[in-house]
Image 1 (cartoon, one colour):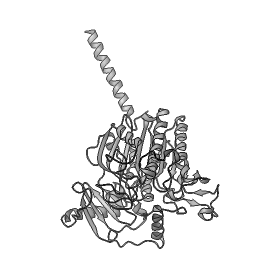
Image 2 (image 1 turned 90 degrees about the vertical axis):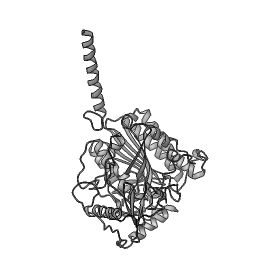
Image 3 (image 1 turned 30 degrees about the horizontal axis):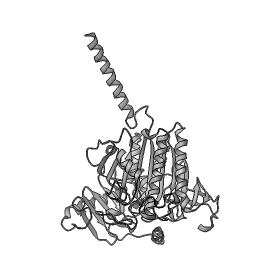
Image 4 (image 1 turned 180 degrees about the vertical axis):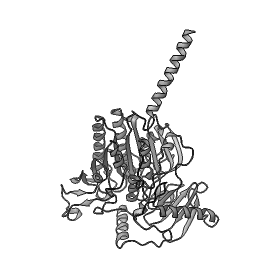
Length: 474
């Protein structure tokens, strides 16, 4: 009898210890070290390019495929826009870029898009004790000190301000945009001018060195790693030539995947993998490459323009080899990380960011988003809710698609569904009027958003955006 009682007490004690261990592992649990966070952002990687997203893909992406096996692959993830700059604004601020009138891409001397007062993923995490770093492509504008001269005349040591360091990043090593990939900044100065082919290998070394350094520190870290592949210029390093079996473009994408692999290895070598949330995704669809069944590609309002790969790994939290079909947006990172840390965001932050933590943990009882807004550089807008996607073209015309029945957006069913059109139009107008798409105090937009194609643009602004976009393809 005593033995039975002892056994029962031992079992209870073991269950108590196990429950405490499980609680300690929960996001934001008292006493638990917050997870490190790494976001690897590919540039122009289309939904159909990684092997884990398209069987028989001609491209080699072994590290993305590995993450898919070890984490969660999202099938309905979207960027805020179908081009670079607006998406990056949305990712860091959790706000739709149409609210500031940003639809196209920036050039070297474009002014900064993010104000110092705006909460970003980096500034929020920094306030919670994280060390924060941006290594790679910025493309969100910066302020150049007077006397910088023309772009080709910029010298080593030239100073800038209002770049990544001004919006929450402790460390910055990278470049303004892909067309100026060889002009390297360290913090707020031009540090070097190197050949484009050298940049990604150096970027990988910087990222690995950063992880090694932070492994010796007590504080958690946030690494934002925006890559260039497979965006132009297509400049794979010599050691990757012919390695992909898909010519130069494939070698370039393979090199980007290799950089991701270097990050994974650095996390493992430093025993950081188990407490690191690692996300790999893309800023928009592939440039000039359409992958069925999706319609369109980069710059389009259709799915091929903004539906992107999105893979997340967090050992012990995210179930390996899992798939999530919920609709999410890159804007959602800010709210997600805030929920992980149990941080309440102010009303004037993350107006269009929704936590996807329930999706990541497999605890969601339904869709985490009420609806999702898309935009194109041509100033087309769209709103997606469930299977329905209502497009407001810049011409003033509308299109409606049922993505469950017609993922390729071939059958415009606008005329057959007036009640759906009315409901989604009303919701879109509400999102515009409230300055937010999430619960909270209404906010003000910094730009007028029109659904009838009659919106006005400041003189010269659209020319700058379209010229920059054209150069994006040169």
